[in-house]
Length: 217
Image (cartoon, rainbow, N blue to C red; front, side, top):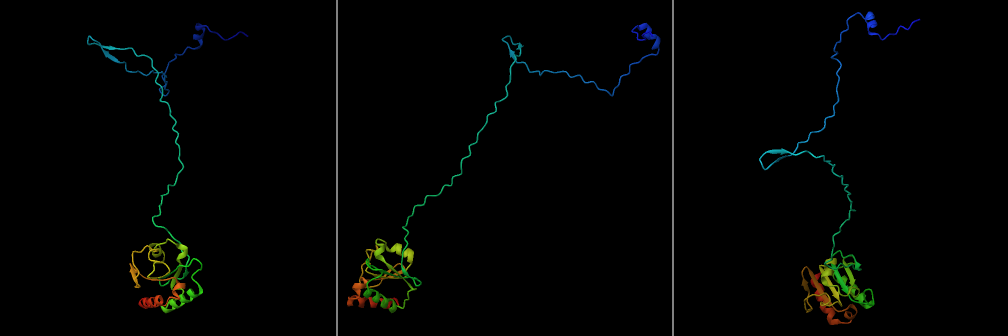
Protein backbone atom coordinates (compact mmCIF):
# COMPACT_ATOMS: atom_id res chain seq x y z
CA UNK A 1 0.00 0.00 0.00
CA UNK A 2 1.37 3.35 -1.00
CA UNK A 3 2.14 5.99 1.66
CA UNK A 4 -0.79 8.43 1.77
CA UNK A 5 1.11 11.14 3.67
CA UNK A 6 2.03 14.05 1.41
CA UNK A 7 3.52 17.51 1.87
CA UNK A 8 2.65 18.75 -1.60
CA UNK A 9 0.74 21.99 -1.38
CA UNK A 10 -1.10 21.43 -4.68
CA UNK A 11 -2.18 18.04 -3.55
CA UNK A 12 -3.40 19.33 -0.20
CA UNK A 13 -5.66 21.83 -2.00
CA UNK A 14 -7.57 18.95 -3.50
CA UNK A 15 -8.60 17.78 -0.04
CA UNK A 16 -9.13 21.12 1.76
CA UNK A 17 -11.46 22.95 -0.70
CA UNK A 18 -13.32 25.02 1.93
CA UNK A 19 -12.32 28.55 2.96
CA UNK A 20 -10.49 28.89 6.28
CA UNK A 21 -11.17 32.00 8.43
CA UNK A 22 -9.18 33.28 11.43
CA UNK A 23 -11.42 34.46 14.30
CA UNK A 24 -10.05 36.42 17.28
CA UNK A 25 -11.00 34.88 20.68
CA UNK A 26 -11.48 37.86 23.06
CA UNK A 27 -11.92 35.57 26.05
CA UNK A 28 -8.23 34.76 25.97
CA UNK A 29 -5.91 37.53 27.20
CA UNK A 30 -2.32 37.30 26.18
CA UNK A 31 -0.05 39.18 28.55
CA UNK A 32 3.44 40.05 27.46
CA UNK A 33 5.82 40.40 30.46
CA UNK A 34 8.36 43.12 29.71
CA UNK A 35 10.99 43.96 32.31
CA UNK A 36 11.02 47.71 32.75
CA UNK A 37 14.13 49.20 34.26
CA UNK A 38 13.55 52.00 36.75
CA UNK A 39 14.11 55.42 35.31
CA UNK A 40 16.10 57.63 37.59
CA UNK A 41 16.08 61.37 37.11
CA UNK A 42 19.27 62.59 35.53
CA UNK A 43 20.96 65.52 37.21
CA UNK A 44 20.87 68.79 35.34
CA UNK A 45 23.77 71.24 35.68
CA UNK A 46 23.64 74.78 34.46
CA UNK A 47 26.72 75.63 32.40
CA UNK A 48 28.50 78.94 32.25
CA UNK A 49 26.69 79.77 29.03
CA UNK A 50 23.37 79.49 30.78
CA UNK A 51 22.35 76.26 29.10
CA UNK A 52 21.23 73.27 31.11
CA UNK A 53 23.36 70.22 30.56
CA UNK A 54 22.23 66.76 31.53
CA UNK A 55 24.95 64.67 33.04
CA UNK A 56 25.03 61.00 32.28
CA UNK A 57 23.85 58.85 35.08
CA UNK A 58 26.50 56.64 36.54
CA UNK A 59 25.74 53.22 37.81
CA UNK A 60 25.56 53.29 41.56
CA UNK A 61 24.68 50.69 44.09
CA UNK A 62 22.34 51.64 46.88
CA UNK A 63 23.03 49.44 49.82
CA UNK A 64 20.38 48.70 52.39
CA UNK A 65 21.02 50.14 55.81
CA UNK A 66 22.87 47.81 58.06
CA UNK A 67 20.83 46.22 60.76
CA UNK A 68 22.35 47.10 64.07
CA UNK A 69 21.61 44.62 66.80
CA UNK A 70 20.81 46.38 70.02
CA UNK A 71 21.61 44.32 73.03
CA UNK A 72 19.55 45.35 76.00
CA UNK A 73 21.21 44.62 79.26
CA UNK A 74 18.69 44.02 81.97
CA UNK A 75 20.00 45.02 85.31
CA UNK A 76 18.96 43.11 88.34
CA UNK A 77 16.49 45.01 90.40
CA UNK A 78 18.24 46.19 93.53
CA UNK A 79 16.20 47.28 96.46
CA UNK A 80 17.69 50.43 97.98
CA UNK A 81 17.01 50.67 101.54
CA UNK A 82 17.04 53.94 103.36
CA UNK A 83 19.87 54.51 105.78
CA UNK A 84 18.43 54.97 109.24
CA UNK A 85 20.59 56.64 111.82
CA UNK A 86 19.22 56.31 115.33
CA UNK A 87 18.97 59.72 116.92
CA UNK A 88 17.90 58.49 120.32
CA UNK A 89 19.49 55.62 122.17
CA UNK A 90 17.03 52.75 122.46
CA UNK A 91 17.12 50.90 125.79
CA UNK A 92 15.67 47.67 126.98
CA UNK A 93 15.28 47.43 130.74
CA UNK A 94 14.86 44.42 132.99
CA UNK A 95 12.59 45.39 135.85
CA UNK A 96 10.20 43.98 138.44
CA UNK A 97 6.50 44.81 138.63
CA UNK A 98 3.72 45.69 136.20
CA UNK A 99 3.90 49.52 136.08
CA UNK A 100 0.11 49.80 135.80
CA UNK A 101 0.05 53.08 137.73
CA UNK A 102 3.19 54.46 136.05
CA UNK A 103 5.27 54.56 139.24
CA UNK A 104 9.00 54.05 138.72
CA UNK A 105 11.15 53.01 141.69
CA UNK A 106 14.91 53.26 141.23
CA UNK A 107 17.36 51.44 143.50
CA UNK A 108 21.13 51.43 143.23
CA UNK A 109 22.77 48.27 144.50
CA UNK A 110 25.48 46.53 142.40
CA UNK A 111 25.67 43.55 144.79
CA UNK A 112 21.96 42.64 145.10
CA UNK A 113 18.99 42.46 142.80
CA UNK A 114 17.18 45.05 144.91
CA UNK A 115 18.93 45.63 148.22
CA UNK A 116 19.91 43.90 151.42
CA UNK A 117 17.31 42.20 153.58
CA UNK A 118 16.92 45.40 155.64
CA UNK A 119 16.59 47.49 152.51
CA UNK A 120 13.98 45.17 150.94
CA UNK A 121 11.92 45.19 154.11
CA UNK A 122 12.00 48.97 154.17
CA UNK A 123 10.88 49.08 150.55
CA UNK A 124 7.92 46.81 151.30
CA UNK A 125 6.79 49.27 153.99
CA UNK A 126 7.19 52.21 151.62
CA UNK A 127 5.06 50.80 148.80
CA UNK A 128 2.44 49.69 151.32
CA UNK A 129 2.32 53.18 152.79
CA UNK A 130 1.33 54.65 149.44
CA UNK A 131 -1.10 51.83 148.61
CA UNK A 132 0.93 50.26 145.80
CA UNK A 133 0.97 46.62 144.81
CA UNK A 134 3.58 44.82 142.76
CA UNK A 135 1.51 45.25 139.62
CA UNK A 136 1.33 49.02 140.11
CA UNK A 137 5.02 50.00 139.93
CA UNK A 138 8.21 49.19 138.00
CA UNK A 139 11.31 48.45 140.10
CA UNK A 140 14.64 49.02 138.32
CA UNK A 141 18.14 48.51 139.69
CA UNK A 142 19.98 51.49 138.22
CA UNK A 143 23.37 49.91 139.03
CA UNK A 144 22.96 47.77 135.90
CA UNK A 145 22.15 50.78 133.70
CA UNK A 146 24.69 53.37 134.75
CA UNK A 147 24.70 56.39 132.45
CA UNK A 148 21.04 56.21 131.49
CA UNK A 149 19.45 59.60 131.98
CA UNK A 150 15.94 60.70 132.84
CA UNK A 151 14.96 61.18 129.20
CA UNK A 152 15.64 57.53 128.36
CA UNK A 153 13.83 56.33 131.46
CA UNK A 154 10.85 58.54 130.76
CA UNK A 155 10.59 57.39 127.17
CA UNK A 156 10.43 53.78 128.28
CA UNK A 157 8.46 53.84 131.54
CA UNK A 158 6.57 57.15 131.19
CA UNK A 159 6.43 57.57 134.98
CA UNK A 160 4.01 59.89 136.73
CA UNK A 161 5.82 59.31 140.04
CA UNK A 162 9.49 58.40 140.49
CA UNK A 163 11.05 57.26 143.78
CA UNK A 164 14.82 57.32 143.57
CA UNK A 165 16.84 55.49 146.23
CA UNK A 166 20.59 55.98 145.90
CA UNK A 167 20.41 57.51 142.40
CA UNK A 168 21.48 61.14 142.37
CA UNK A 169 20.03 64.05 140.42
CA UNK A 170 23.28 64.39 138.46
CA UNK A 171 23.07 60.71 137.42
CA UNK A 172 19.80 61.41 135.68
CA UNK A 173 21.19 64.63 134.11
CA UNK A 174 18.55 66.82 135.71
CA UNK A 175 19.30 70.44 136.46
CA UNK A 176 17.90 70.59 140.01
CA UNK A 177 19.11 70.78 143.59
CA UNK A 178 17.54 68.44 146.11
CA UNK A 179 16.10 70.35 149.09
CA UNK A 180 14.05 67.55 150.61
CA UNK A 181 11.06 68.63 148.55
CA UNK A 182 9.25 66.89 145.73
CA UNK A 183 10.62 67.90 142.32
CA UNK A 184 8.06 68.42 139.59
CA UNK A 185 9.80 67.79 136.28
CA UNK A 186 7.46 68.11 133.32
CA UNK A 187 4.73 65.53 134.05
CA UNK A 188 6.70 63.55 136.65
CA UNK A 189 6.92 64.09 140.43
CA UNK A 190 10.28 62.89 141.76
CA UNK A 191 11.42 62.07 145.32
CA UNK A 192 15.11 61.45 146.03
CA UNK A 193 16.31 59.48 149.05
CA UNK A 194 19.49 57.65 150.14
CA UNK A 195 20.23 54.03 149.26
CA UNK A 196 17.68 51.69 150.88
CA UNK A 197 20.18 49.96 153.10
CA UNK A 198 21.56 53.26 154.40
CA UNK A 199 18.09 54.78 154.64
CA UNK A 200 16.93 52.04 156.99
CA UNK A 201 19.32 53.30 159.71
CA UNK A 202 18.90 57.02 158.95
CA UNK A 203 15.96 58.23 161.07
CA UNK A 204 16.08 61.85 159.86
CA UNK A 205 16.05 60.84 156.18
CA UNK A 206 13.17 58.45 156.80
CA UNK A 207 11.04 61.21 158.38
CA UNK A 208 11.64 63.47 155.37
CA UNK A 209 10.73 60.60 153.04
CA UNK A 210 7.48 59.84 154.92
CA UNK A 211 6.48 63.49 154.71
CA UNK A 212 6.91 63.53 150.95
CA UNK A 213 5.16 60.20 150.47
CA UNK A 214 2.05 61.60 152.15
CA UNK A 215 1.91 64.27 149.44
CA UNK A 216 1.73 61.80 146.55
CA UNK A 217 -0.85 59.42 148.05
